Amino acid sequence: MRSLRQSLPPLNALAVFEAAARHRSFTRAAAELNIAQSAVSRHVSNLEADLGVTLFMRSGNRLALTGAGETLADAILSGLGRIRDSVEAIRRRRGEADSFTIACTYAMAHDWLMPRFGMLRAVLPKAQLRLITSDTYQSFDADEVDLSIRYGEPSDWPGLRHRKLLEEEVFPVCAPAMLAQFPGLAEDSPQAWRQAPLLHFAPDAQGRVDWLDWFGDLGIAPSQDGPMFSAYTPMLQEALAGRGVVLGWRGIVDPYLETGQLVRLANRSMTSGHAFYVVHHPDACESVIEAVIEVLANPEPPAAPVIS
Image (cartoon, rainbow, N blue to C red; front, side, top):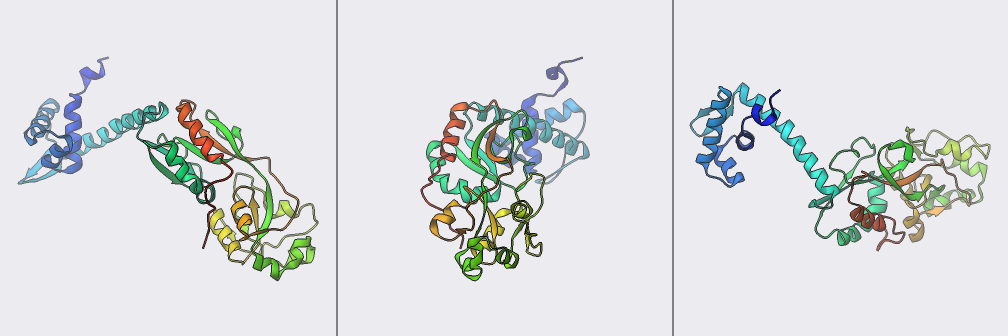
């Protein structure tokens, strides 16, 4: 079997062709690559001679890819793009990349990460911070993600390193206006709980505590008539507006309890045995990860978030 170098056209010619194919212009490709337009034309001509096909159809100053050109451009985008992503991932893990990407849910971003974002920028002054938010973890394992915050347990992320960020502690909360409307909630009155509007988290595979769990020990069947949310932040906004009672997670609702926007309704707490973890690749640069985790684990950010 011949080596890659023997089988492939010159890599410089492939890189030049990719730029010309993407821009559909030799002039713009030359400007991007900082070479002469004649050099772009020469690389493409040599590549066409090597492959024995025409890659571009020329009409005046306009370029269009032929079928063979489209095939080659797609292959280069896939192959060299994957190499580029892998190289960038290796650089990030060595602490040499010019960016640092954190992935988490929107609720965790709004209520935990963003109050600490300025501190993160201070400890990573040379890196462009990037934030990916999603309420599913499917994209959190992508190569460009340096660190993610996830809810669950370590066995959910085999092959990745983890550090516990927040223990799970769940209890009901509501706005002062809602408590004024149903004062019996403060005394765990079954009648008040049956009457108060409950806000529900849509069932998911992560096993979060829900109202059925909360009322299981009280002998109360919770109403299922209230609105249901697939994301936590809109549900929390509804509670802050005084239109329902929500289960609150310690750490997420703390700022609102401190400012009086929410009040806690019970002394007892529940847990499913899960927690919030910082998760990262085992090859990540340890010093960078440690600096980021130290900021994320800070229990007292500079300012509390406010939802208006």
